[in-house]
Length: 236
Image 1: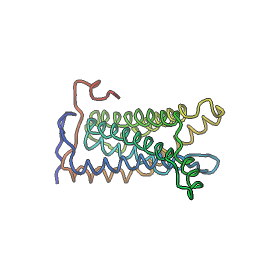
Image 2: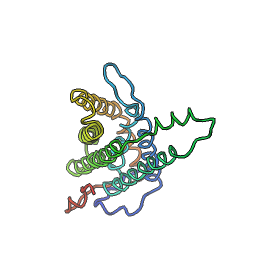
Image 3: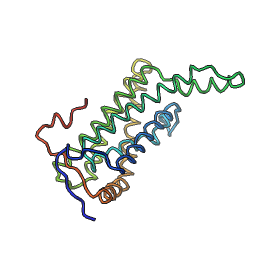
Image 4: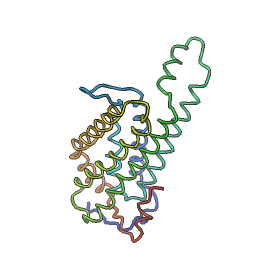
């Protein structure tokens, strides 16, 4: 099947069934990552949230989504995911405040410890995810036009370097600055960042294969040609 080239970021006016499926997976991965973040694990001499095993998939999906559907639908999914994350926080907060059954007091304590979100963690998660994933998608979108669609692995890798860098720096700084020593803060930023981009580099052959399959399945791919780059790439 040939792949139709669609130019212009506003030419896909509605999501396709495959886009909806990808968006659902995208949101589930993000929500699960935020739940797993409550557990800290040790990898060698570094300590990272358990979400590290899953969260890089958010940026891999973002690469595929922007490469196939363009910046407009990618931003739609990103903003929807921010809402899903806020919904998770709101629902779990309400659940922790509901009175537990008399026989489940121990479970209530464990539940509160797992789903205890401080305002700093919430702010860090929202800002870091939104600006990090937006940066990731913007790099994919712009490089695709500059490269005329060639060399997807390079732009997928570079976008992850930028997006994961923005995400990691913002999240750890906003969430922990002032509460842990500066050396520990720097170690957390560097170790998590290196782990994430290495994770995505290892997965790059799979990501490339998925992109090729997805384009053939949809029968099109979007190039974000536009004279108004501010409109296309603005983060709000």
